[in-house]
Image 1 (cartoon, rainbow, N blue to C red):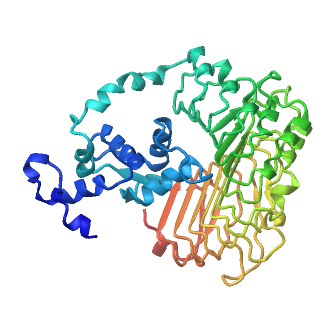
Image 2: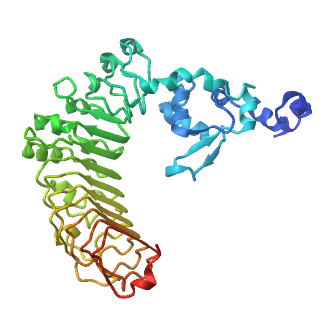
Length: 452
């Protein structure tokens, strides 16, 4: 401590250096590799907010995060640097609660004294890349490349063929590149991959789903689309998602075209073999063309799952038993065109089903008529903590909603003219939205509950 107090830096006039002595002293005593990380942040304009994980990837790209401490991964070293030696201001109130870092004016001037928008001018060419359709084949020769981010390149139609040879790649983000039709060949060679936002199964054999089987280090979010192109179900079996325990968010997506070329039973078996690890927290299944859902969805196999979306699975005639998912908070069911009844199986055979559910949404279910509710009271009934219930464009639904939803705060009904809405059990209701519901019948106390 004494060497800091006696440092001559305290005697430097601030008006000449434009840096607070305490900040300059802190920077002076940082390890050399962390000085580079800290100085790098000066390329961002004042008060620029950036994602913590992306900053770490940028540091990695510059070679700042070499493995200095044993076998630590560079991503872990970067996280330790941010939370330990280098301190930033974290704002947890940003949209989606993403942990971001604000580069303060002091931190900016500590490293370099650049003009405010100099960095933005340097990267104007990359901003224009949103119209990019292809990448040069020379990208396949960047053998030391660790991170490739092509997020929201919505006109990109293909990736370079040689990407499968970039064995040092650790992070590939192509989310938002909606026109990509398939992956390059030999993606299975990228065994160092930790992040792969999307994998698009192509029609041929060169970009088959089996390329995922050796990518054991995948973590975070993964979307697998083009699953209607899987011909051999053994390819889906080989993926072995059950062994990929660090994937927290998974999307499984087929084609929106439900033509005659679709094979219902093949799709049923493909989904059966794509069972994820029990650590999964968020699952989306979209445009699935099987007649029903496999057993792994029906069983309480996912003790950590909080979000589930079943979207446009137009051939399915029933919903899986979901009531035993103990931590499920958000359930979104949409476009299930052949579901006519939600029966007692939906609750999973237990009385206090959906014990943590807070948000429930049904949308675009044109043939849905009946919804079974078990007899119960607010102590032991289903949906004890349901806060928001949304039912939209379910024109044939003509039942009475459950009259025991003690935690319901918001009720949104659109295009459901035959519903019967009781209010005696909606003690907490504070917001009601009704549109295109001319035939809705209210039961008891509606005038005191309505707040438009």
